[in-house]
Amino acid sequence: MTEAKEQPAVEQLALGALFAALADPLRRSIVEELLREPVGARRKCSSFGVGVPRSSMTHHFKVLREAGLITQFDYGNRAEVMLRRADVDARFPGLLDLVALGSRQTVATPEDAGAVN
Image (cartoon, rainbow, N blue to C red; front, side, top):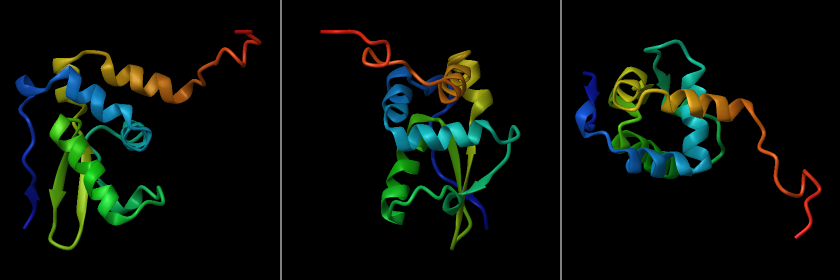
């Protein structure tokens, strides 16, 4: 039996929680990968080949779910996640577009520009 884990309702999504979840590079990379999937697509949690222990991935998915960025479905011996794009866009229009844009751009550092302190 499929069971969706508890997550905040759309009106409970908090910008601070979303920013905190996205501040971690690994979690942000998960969201960036999900943004490249078709809307409503589910991905197996084990498909994000990021090279960290399963327990660490469990923690990262929990943070993303509790922030309201993903829905997580448990199937007993496996789990899948889906980006809550429509919900996040309804509450904070354009936020996920900025995340997607950021994943396609490299940020220039002062060193890249030849700045001297």
